[in-house]
Amino acid sequence: MYFEPNVDATFSFEEFLRQSDIRKDEGRDTREICRLHLKGECYKGRYCSDRHMRPEKGRVCEYWLRGICKKEDKCEFMHEFDINRMPECFFFANYGECLNPECVFVHVGEEEIKECPYYKRGFCSMGPRCKWKHVRAVFCPNFMAGFCMEGKMCKYAHPKFNYPQEDELADKQYLDYIPQKRLRDYDEDFPMPKRPYTGPTDTSRYNDQGPYRRDLDNVICFKCGERGHYANVCTYRGPPVEVEGARQSYQNRFANMQCYNCGEYGHQAAYCPRRT
Image 1 (tube, one colour):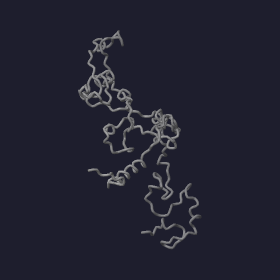
Image 2 (spheres, helix red, strand yellow; image 1 turned 180 degrees about the vertical axis):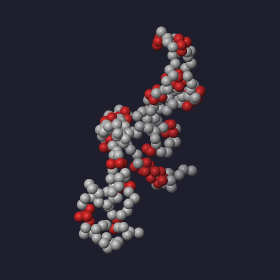
Image 3 (cartoon, helix red, strand yellow; image 1 turned 60 degrees about the vertical axis):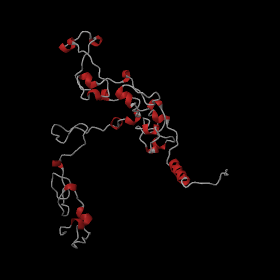
């Protein structure tokens, strides 16, 4: 039996799929990636017509590779196939081999792994779980005694007992891409001027780059007239006291002002002595 296909046939879930595709297209950024921003040379910022990829998106999303990432453009990783930014293979990194002949992840060889600075110093607390390479070497007896004439040409190891620096601990791989122009130090571009040094009695001088702070012994509060504190921390709630050098025109300014709290002239209601 043959039935002629109905061209006007529709399903109840077609409208849902259509609306889902529309919402995805509306929130998706289809602009091209700015090539100058990848090099750290784009100065347009948010006014650039191309898309600026975030620094943390320097690696391809492993869930997107399997087709199960639901974050779309909000994902912290790239949704683009780039062989130079693929994540490291878990099996090859932990077991030394990968049985998948079509593995798309990066296989980092033994010669490409960085030497562990802690193990080179003498001891690494991570042991076999360390992500860096542990190279066994024989210490030079002459160097341990004090001096080795061979220097760098010595076939034995010359240990360094200094603590590893930040540049030795930094994982400088192509997967951790960060534009260099975004790491500029603001203090180097706009250095803070040093305040003048008044002498050995300057007790308020913390360091050469510290902020200028007046000595509290020379500070006079214009509210109570006492020394040793500023007016913003004063506990006096009465009218401001006439102090020489401060509030000289107080009476002239508030002579015709009437307080709505007590009805007297000469002060504001905020400084009324009868305020409860």
